[in-house]
Length: 134
Image 1 (cartoon, helix red, strand yellow):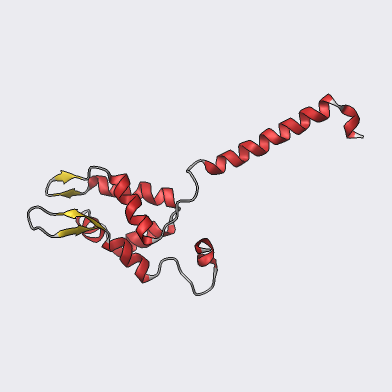
Image 2 (cartoon, rainbow, N blue to C red):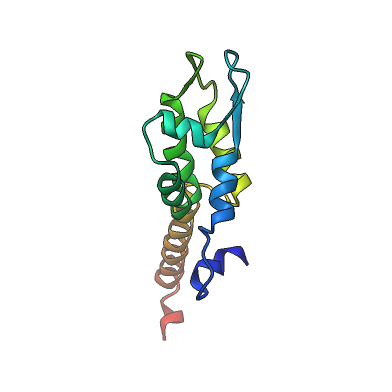
């Protein structure tokens, strides 16, 4: 049902609470200041405006958003240490914000392949048994 929300008038997937959940996702702790590091502070330190970046990420398909956010987190460092698994943290943050990952990245391609194979099989049957065409 959540997939239809952007189509309904007056309902936006990018509501402020969703953006807030994404930006409040905790990435780790600074050993120097002993303060929690959130996605908001990570984006700010990378020179990105957090709210507009979060809105753009929420507008992307799930896998594209994960890839984009993990690219940003790759550049981010906590106390000089690189993020060990940027894709894992990106997926967790987006999942917490409500992004759904229902299909594998190439799942749409399989549908086209199956349709093509079904058409080829039907053509083969019709060529093997020409009387079926009558």
